[in-house]
Length: 66
Image (cartoon, rainbow, N blue to C red):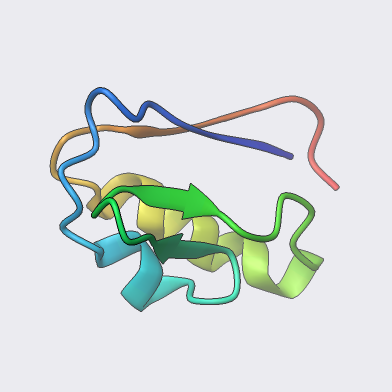
């Protein structure tokens, strides 16, 4: 699973970080970053929830599933 954040779209709502805090965090610049680009399989549903919850559609997934 590849996790991508479009930093031009991100507005720092932090929903992703609240849903999957081991995968996402919001930095000092108020933009989300991926802190674990290879999350464990049991975390993947939370990553999908974070993608769906992003109000600006800034998060996307690509690549093979782990």
